[in-house]
Every structure is written in C-alpha cells, then in structure tokens.
Amino acid sequence: MIITVSGPPGSGKSTLSMKIAEHFNLELVSSGDVFRAMAKEKGVGLEEFGHIAEADPAIDKEIDRRQVELSKTKGDFLFEGRLSGWLIDADLKIMLKTDVGVRARRIAGRENISIQQAMHETMARQKSEAKRYMKYYDIDISDLTLYDLVIESSVWGPDATANVAITAIGSMKEKGRRG
Image (cartoon, rainbow, N blue to C red; front, side, top):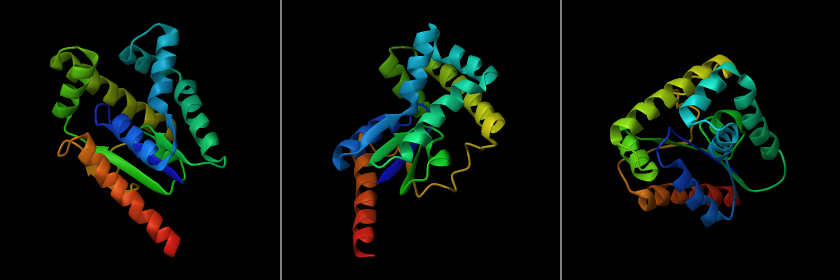
C-alpha cells in the first residue's frame, strides 16, 4: 500500500503521517526532513534555502526523484510532502488544509518563535514553494482535485484528524479485500 500526505507548512502533515504510518505499519518517507537536512548541511535557514532552491532546480528534483524511485519498489510506504500526491502513484492521496493563522501558531509553538515571525516565514516559504513547483513542474499546488481525501485540519486536533484518515484508509482496505 502506498499513501501520500500533503499540506502546507504547519498543517499537521508530519503528525498525521507518523500516526498513519504507525497504525498501518508503513515506512514513512518525509520530503520535508530531507529538505531541512539539506538546508542544515548548507548552514542556512529554511527561508534562505528556499531562495537557493528557487535558483537551483536540482534541489527539489533530487528530493522528488528519491521519493518516486522508492515508490516504485515493493513495499508499504507513506510519502509525506507537498508534492508527494502529484508525483507518486498512490493508493490514497490525502491533503491537509489549514488556516494560515492556525499554521503560524503551530509553527511558532514548535520552533519557539513569535507568531508574527512564524507568519512571515510561513508565507515566504509558501510563496517560494508555489513559485518553484509551477516553474519546475508546471504544478499549481493550490489545485486539490487530484486528492482522494481533503481534511481541514484546523477543525480537529491531531488524534481526531488521524481518526478521520485511518477510518478512510481502513474502509479503502476493506473495499479492496472484497472487490
């Protein structure tokens, strides 16, 4: 089984991905972790690394290439990343939508920064990613039509959001067994 979880920064996709991967014993592959590690290797913050990535398509393409290649191997995976749903042939594609104010509060809390700083960095990152995805892949990241399940994650807490997704996945698996 292959599942993708996508969503903007602070939407809860990492938390949801961990809960789903644990529940269904899936290997979790996070493009955000790879991006953060690459930024750290370069000794720059995420916003600056985003600007570097705007000028160097090799950064995004390497992260995405690794995900796509791994998705073609035999195994049960959950791919977490903003483009995972677009690039990977998955059994189920999940998108988390979340109000930007909620996302900024979440990011501020986990990174110990002000809400204003989190809002600025989140909006800059979102703008940078949208620009790169359109330029490199001709993907409009705001188009949600390819997703099987879209969850407004500011409505529920992490456990309730996970319960919605886990119920959908369980239903899908049951249908697959019968059909």
